[in-house]
Image (cartoon, rainbow, N blue to C red; front, side, top):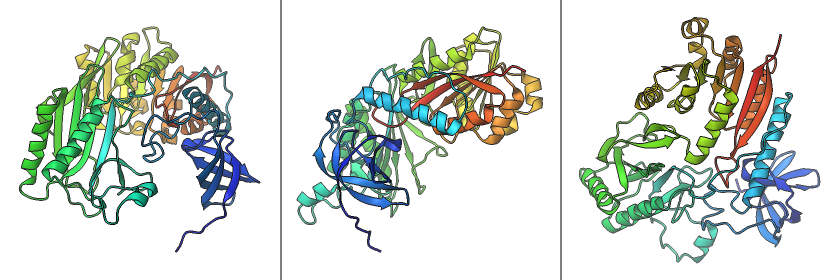
Length: 474
């Protein structure tokens, strides 16, 4: 069925930043959400999707550009979908994120709140990430403008290494320079692409599931180490040799790579958590440092992707915990134990709990590396582990630190926390909306004492938030 063509909306003034990196305008009673615009822009819009009370639209023409608008640094802005706010000055990005946290905690949480602390802006706003992932595709995606100037039949089968287009699993746009990570990662990615073209390496077809080059992950650390993991898809007997020739080429050209890994992934998806990785050069891990601690990070490890800002986030969590040295701390969703190990020297004992067994093993290793002996880690479902018997064995927590995934905490986990009844809860969240929902569930027994937003991802709508809760009297 053909897409419905809506009439043009002319001279629409963009009013404010909205959710998911979009901005909002009103046409009569209808709210209209628009990407890649900033407050103050006056634009002509074409509606792409319409519902009863709102619509989504795209800009057809800029009538007048906002005085607040700045020129995006990235040549791919508006295409890859990653940095949706790069046309908005950073101070206004922070203002919008502060407002986002306030709106979600007040409208969804509906709990008594203190005055919010000013958001902690990122130390770096470019080249701040320590990890990026790129997909490979046998047929690259073209913008309308590129297609308009492309000769008939030219380049349509050209492979690509880049980012998936939003909402399209099989469409990858080639990236020449991404500003989110140290420029060496661009050099490595572009070199792999050129080597593939020069040597006839095939790119993965995401529909037919054939093609040698499938996925690339790059990590670096504040110790100066670099990790590169390439996912291959062997189709023919000679593919393994082609893969190893490429890896040797990278060894020869980029001595900065201290950990070069690869895997033959024959699955229909590019996840590798259940696959055995092979080390081609160096070690299968790199180190990150934080204060006097070292954290071992392998290809499957979760580690906050903005290293410098992660330190500030964890400092807030440690401050909110108000540890005096004799407390028992439970760290829920501990991951590889970063927070648990970070606060351990301030506590009598830290108990970390995480669903993923491999992460728990990494957490134990990180304690061992740093000579920390007052931590213990357990793998399993939070609501199943945190029983009365577990608490009786390991001690009732004085403080619980929880850092759940975007979905927030399961109601059963909230009940377990209420049953454990710590004096304080420190809730670290990457999604203030689900955090607000959980705060309302905790409100009967806990009062919000402090709120600290932290920006981990400049130029994106994502924001972290740390909340301190104390047990109510009586």
